[in-house]
Length: 213
Image (cartoon, rainbow, N blue to C red; front, side, top):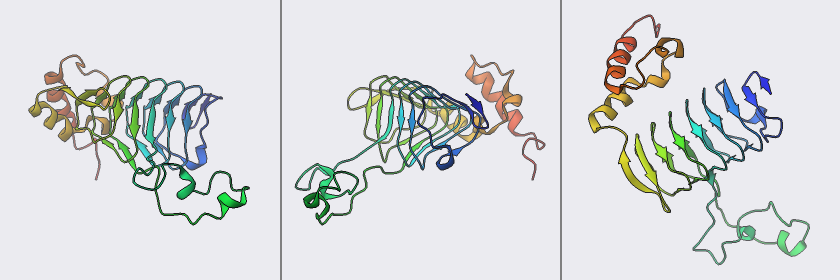
């Protein structure tokens, strides 16, 4: 269904008044996005994915099917891993449950996904993680630690497989920040030649009219 945010499927659970959008975005069927999340321009989220509260997704992100981003942390050094010790959201009609003196805990910590990040199907990214721009998260990966920009990672737990480009190219891409340039300015770039792209992007970025004072 097209609206001011882009396209949001009717079956998606998206409280649009409680999410920060930079349209257009594309959210597929049976996606759940919790309040307090942010979704950047041209990002799409595929069928069945869950984006928890406190997650920020940058521009041009590709989120595969059945992905979870910002998955909860439960206490592992408390008496129990069950939320009865820390949360009042369950079983509150039971007087014993309601009477518990709860301890401080945060299930969903701030999670930051940079720009141009591709997250493969059924990947799980724990809350509190930062994924650098340009990274690739392999299908089925479980990400428990921060990921460097332009890294390709995979596995359980996820580990570095390789970098997408040489370090000097990555540094230039991060400096030029192509995702901030209007799409109309980059529509004719030689996308399949990263070195030619960088030359063109630097020239575009130097145009004073692009970013008026």
